[in-house]
Image (cartoon, rainbow, N blue to C red):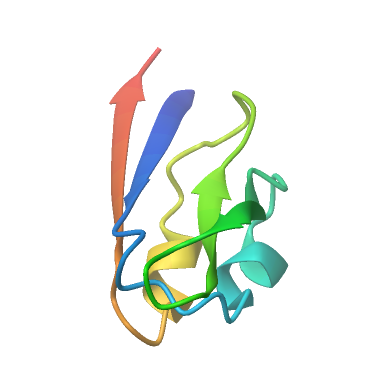
Length: 72
C-alpha cells in the first residue's frame, strides 16, 4: 500500500538544526533561504516525494513538525 505524505513545520519555532533534513529518506526537506523572526533558516518541505514516514518529526529536538499521510 502506498502513502502520500505532507509535513507542517512551525517556522517560528524551528531553529534550523537540519536534523530532519539529514533523516528524511526521500530528501523532501531542506532549509529555507528565508529566516524566521529569530534569524534561523527554518526547515521546509520541497517537492512531492514525502511518504509520511514521520522520521523528521521523531528526530526533531523541538517537536515543531506535524506529519500527515493518506493512502493513494
